[in-house]
Length: 374
Image (cartoon, rainbow, N blue to C red; front, side, top):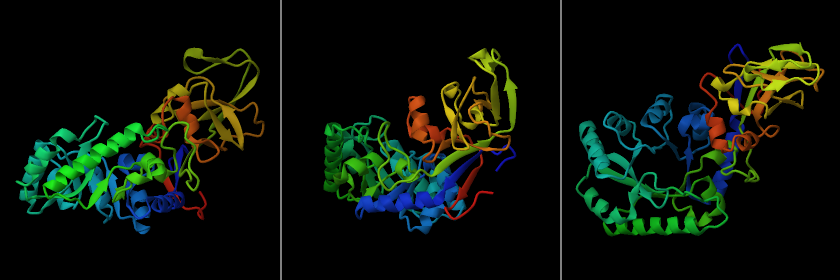
């Protein structure tokens, strides 16, 4: 915790419980826990160790650098790197025993060259583009790519995967189409004798709404942290939000009616008001767009944000909370009392972005339910 008292509290017990609920939903498929982007802002190292203690069989990150950090912290479970092979990182990933994503001839050459330099076969997962149109091998090139791989014994194809673009849509038509394309791609590789251990396409929304897509492995991310995979979608039963962002009141001043607050004078007090100063701002990941819109929780009561959110500070109106004092804890977002989804709705975004915005300068403190914050 830093001297400001602005802290992101991460309940590892909630994350473990969410993981076990995902295992139940997976019905025997391996659960690959997605912990990229510092576990969606929750602290990848602590989360990975908690999951490994629960027997998690696999995890995934975006970058080889993220995989290196996990290995250096002692994580032993298999790791899939979603990012494509890079000359400077592929040999490191191979030494770490991590699987890398491939879907172009250049990726194959890079990975094979790195494998030769290390003297160890490279594990790969082939990414198929089934309609996301972001990255991946088009279905039309599956046959040729399968043939290409036969010339590179340095590469062991451990998995094949794709990614749903619209799995939370009540209309399943496009998700069904993606599944059909993925199945067709798998068939092309099977003809070439490539039968991966892991076939995976289901993300959090896919796992919830399309159980037929579980296959050998599922890749839940946002549900692991007890957050919703889509705007307007209530958190399913059995999942608990793991993150709560708090700060404290550092100063209170009396502001006469008619006085304005913060940059641009966007808020003017209509009455004599008690204004609390919070040591948190947009540099901490509390967006300026929440100015004059959001509220925080103090002593169980909502206090509105007034004036523009600053880089390091935010002001709130304490007039309706006469007992509020300097030093009081302030819940900024998270948990059940001030859900991340509420902030996401205000910002016209998704839960993922809100928690990922919490900056590195905000300490993450990992706790269990039976521990007391100090």
